[in-house]
Structures are given as structure tokens and as C-alpha cells.
Image (tube, rainbow, N blue to C red; front, side, top):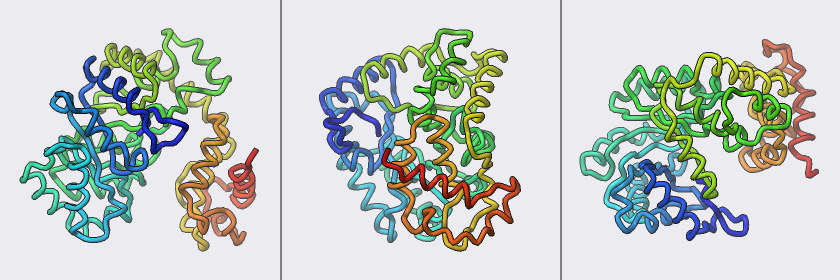
Length: 360
């Protein structure tokens, strides 16, 4: 998903550099490679098919994902899997996930018989282990977990800042208790935790070990026995080398209680930088006009907290449909009447709109 690219174009993978990086990582012990149908504008799977030639395919567990949101009819399950196998130049995928499940996509593909289809696909040897990646609230995660007793694994966004986000810590413990392997995606929160703002970096310099913030974030994830694997995107050889060093010295339970308390202080310092005390409880939803209030407030908060306004502005423009943005707000203030924090939501939405739509 984050391979090096040419001219800033995510569809133009720097194949020479990416091949050197990936093969070096595999030579040094990395044995799980994760991709998905839309990554790098549809080029990631084909690149991997080429890169894993010369015996490298046999050295790794290959993970790929069904583009759940593109499924329209039952025949699409076979159609997409067949296309992915062709792109990857392989007869089987080791770990196959239903990609980016939310309440809507999960219920739709269930109605189309995805679980029955998966049983047949596994029986035919086209993939070996079945799981899902997740982007919704805990109650939806719990529904998915309980719906099928042959899940082998799941993939959740999990890092020291996202303990209560989406599936969160409760989802981690639930899945582990059910016997699922849990894969942590975004252990560095898309790189945000690797490049902290000055006030956070100042605090990191007081840490007990001379690790970079990226390593502290990775070690926090690896420290937990319920985590089977951490996915970390790399786009330079330097990042590969640093992650290899970090992985070699990682193990569950290696961080001291004092270090865990220190990381919690880092988390609280980040939260101090958060301008809107929104807990994402969703009591303000649904908005009569369809405005996705918690998501908009979250993007505004993250742009300020992590000092990455351009990232939040991109996400607002790319992932929130125009009809669900602030401009649709009619200032009825029903959201404020339901907010347990008594937040002036309408005013905060206007502030967020000005920030997220700014070109400065």
C-alpha cells in the first residue's frame, strides 16, 4: 500500500527500488506480505506477482483482500478472486480477507452468501485462511465475529492512540479470546506517530531507551500477546532496515511498567493538543441532513493534534461525499441536544469546515 512511487503518482510504483526493498526484507526474515485489490491504483497485486518470482513466493505467507464494496452479485466473489490470483501469478493465497468491513458492506455480502462461497473456495485450495479487515464500531465487529465460527484471523486499526477507536482494545481481546489471530494495521497511524509535533518529540527525548518514536509505537503493539502481527508500510530502504532492527528485538511483555506509563503520558499529551473534546460516542448520529459529524470533528482534531492539516484536508475531500459534509448542515441543533458532552457542535462544524477546506 505504501511502496515507493515515481513522480508522486501512487499508480507508478518504483519497481526497481520496491523489488530491492521487499526481497531484502524477505531475505532478512519477513515472511508475511499484505496487499489488496485497490492498492497503488490497482497495481500492487501485479507488482507483487512479478516481485515474488525466483523462489520468493515460497518464502512468504501472502495476504490479499476481496474488495467488498465492489461486490454486486454472487458471481463477483469468484470473478475478483480469479483476477487477483492472475495478477499475483499464483494458484493460491495464504490469507484472504474481506476488505474494510463496515455494517453496510458486511450485511450486503452476507445476503449474497459470502460465507458459503468462502467455504467452497477454501475447499478448492484457492486460499487457506479466511479473515476480514475492519472499519466500523465495536458492536459491528462483535456481530461479525459471532456470525461465523471459522474465522482464522482479523485485521484492525490498533496503536497506542487508537485503543478506543473502531474495534479497539475491546475488539482485540474479544477476537483473541475467540482464538483469532489479530493483525494490527496502522501501528504508526499511517506514519503520523513516526513524525510527532515538536512538543511530543520533546517528551520522547526523555524516554528510557534511545528509540525513535516509530519504534516505540511498534514495540507498544508487539508488546501485547494478543497481537499476532503488525503491518507497517515502508517506502524507503532506510525504513526497511529500521523495522528489521525493531522486529528482531521485539517480544510480548518486553516493555516495563514504567515504559508503558511513559507511553500513556505521550498519548495524554497528544490528547491535550486535541481542540474538540469529542469522544466519538455517535449520540449525535444520525444527522437529519446526513452530515457525518463525528468523522468531520475527528479529521479536524487529527489535523491539529498531529500537525498534519494537509492529510486531514485530503481525507475530507477524498472520502467524505459532498452531501455528508458541513455544507449540508441546517443548524437544527438536534445533535447538540443529544451530545453528552454538551458541545457547541454547530460552531465546531463551521470551524472544521474552514480548516478542512482551506488551501493554505
